[in-house]
Structures are given as structure tokens and as C-alpha cells.
Image (cartoon, rainbow, N blue to C red):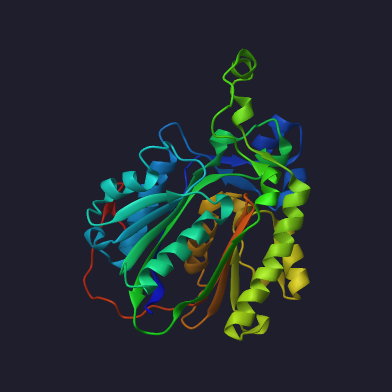
Length: 346
């Protein structure tokens, strides 16, 4: 069994920012009303020239630079998204071509806000069996294009962005220690985004496609999320023989600060043990965890040897998580750089 390490990470956020003041004016709510219910101050929104694909490409380039990995050496590309710019070709194939990963297989994965963690699990298994030596896993979303902006239950939560990681195999024990994933389709109707209207009739056209916007039962998703965070973390700790006191940092899906605070209380740990960045980026669905990871690295919240838990949860309903011993094995000495926006990001 080969061990999977995070050797690169990169993020991309649109320059366009929608602050609570602006959104509140649309909804007839105050900025403070939004902050108290979500923990969010602002979210990033894609411009007309930005798509899930373009953001995924930029995040991928930056992750490869951190990993010092030539894209021609990539074996596998997985893009987790619920908001692709196209169904065919896949976003992953667009990324594969754009970055020059000529030797990589590529596919998209749909598991809503758990998608990135599902992708990490798939990549880890591919590396563990020896099928792949390395993989690029991306979470990318333009949720702003599937939101009913008159619905305060969803419009105050979501933002756009992309995050990517490079996973590489090593014989050195460490990296991802244990993983889990799950689903319960009986809760599927609590978070729904129709792909295609079943009947393209006059009523649908006059509604401006409104049927094809996200609908969420917020109370049921809250109950599911707070329960699944606690039970899944305990499951992982039981598998590893660790205790919650051994965990240095938890990086959860950035859904809603109330969910995270409730989970911390049930686990009897300080909320500071959970890393959050949703106050400035909102809920970015599958992009949420890799964006948070990049911020945690930039804020020096991760040290070699730290025990870290990543946990995603969302529509489906689905969940996925892993326990990581943070650190980098010595894999290579070569360097590869991309030119992004006319600047070398190395």
C-alpha cells in the first residue's frame, strides 16, 4: 500500500465581492442579520468571463507549482463540481488540456459539498493500489448562477471559487492515515438543484428557468450536518486509535458558522479547533475545503506532524472525511513553474 501525501495546494477566487450590505439590500435584510445567521461577511462571485472551468484551471496551476510537479507527470485529474460550465466535455478534460497534462485520465465527480472529499478518497485509493503515482483533485463551483436571489435561505450562504490539491504516493508512512465516505439518499430532497426541467413549457419559460435553481430545507440540513460531523469524526478516531485531544486542527466544509459551533460543542472542543474562512468566502460547496486548506497553510495553522481532520458534508445527502498526518516526504528535487496572469507563482 502506497501512502498519499498532500504535496501541493492552490486556490482561485473571483475579484468580484458581494458584501452583506449589497445582498441585504436585495433581500430587505440588514448586513448584521445575515452575519448572525451564517457567520458570513462577504462572498466572491464569478464575472461574465469566469466559469467553473476557468477557476479550476487557475487553482490547478497554482497547486502544481507548490508541488513542483510538471503536469505531464500527472496520472489522474478529478474535478468535483455541481455547477459545471458544460456537462460534455467534463471540466476535468478542459483542465487536462489547458494545463498540458497529456498523460492523465480525467473525470468530473458530483457529490455536492462533499465532492472534493470524495475526490480525495478516489485519488487516495488509486495511489494506494499503485494505479496512479499522483493525482490532481479540484473543487470548483459557480453557485451564484444557480441561486434564486430572492430566496434568503440560500442566497445569503453561497459564493464562487476553486481550490485544488496535488496528492502523491510515497512508501514513507504518513499523509492520509484513514478515510471514510457515506451517503443517505433518503435525505436527497432536502437540497435539490434540478439539471433539466422535465417539461419545457410556457410556465417554465415565463419563470425564467427559476425551477432550475437551488432549493434547500435549511433546518433538516442543519440537523444532518451537526450529527454527521460528530459521528464521522468519532468513527475516524476509533479507526486510528486517536482521541479528539490528539487532533490539532479540523478543517470542515464551510457551510454555516452555527453548524460548526454546534459540532464543536457536541465534541466538547473549542470552536478554535475548527478552521474557518467562511466569513470572507461564504459556502463554496465543493471548493470549500481546499480553499480553507490554502488559507490554513497561509496562516501557518499547519505544522509538520500535526493531526488534521478534513470533513465534508452536503446534498445527496453525502459525507466524506479523512485523518491526515501533515507533512511532506522528499519526493523530487526538480522544479516546474507556470506563468499565470504574467507572473510566476513559485
